[in-house]
Image 1 (cartoon, helix red, strand yellow):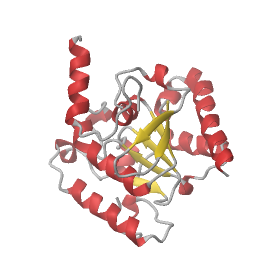
Image 2 (tube, rainbow, N blue to C red):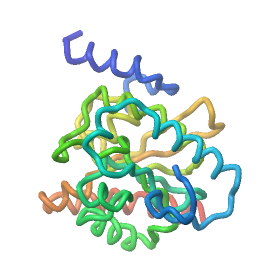
Image 3 (cartoon, rainbow, N blue to C red):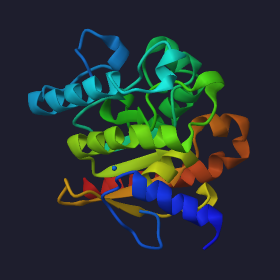
Image 4 (cartoon, one colour):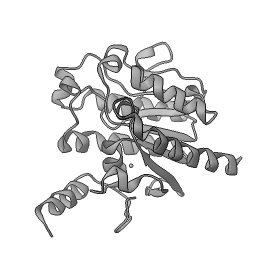
Length: 236
């Protein structure tokens, strides 16, 4: 086993991941008045209480990221969503507004959702890391590990039917794999948690910010979105 694989296995072991896929890739909110944590459209007190508890734990998390960021960015959308979209970390616009995917990448995500007949308020949108890294750099492995338990808790609370991973960081965190995103996309993976009595079908695709820089990958992203749309249509 080479050093890279050893490091990755150590990453998975230390993350407290409670699901296993062997050789294939395979787990906030204050008040409705506080728009920094998204818009709550659903009345579900039990879920809301659990989300609030997660938020409080994130607030007191000892991380250097909060020293350079302006606002904690947790999620936007519905806590009763059947689809979760998970990105990497807040950017400049997200840091200012306290909401995920509100900049140019967020505008593209909104168009992507509309293309498969989904509305932003119908899905749950979050990130692996909830504070903006300085200069929009990629989160480190240590930072991913710090926030991963809270992301897993969110999945357990939301209990989605599908997870759509936006970018390599999200794929690494949720699928626990060293494989490149290009090898992961285009197929369904299975996310399993000890807290959920079901399998959550998961697909990895490109981050909207990447698509803005590399529009030649939009066709592949559209194919992934169509896979999600097909699943949703079959369920309905």
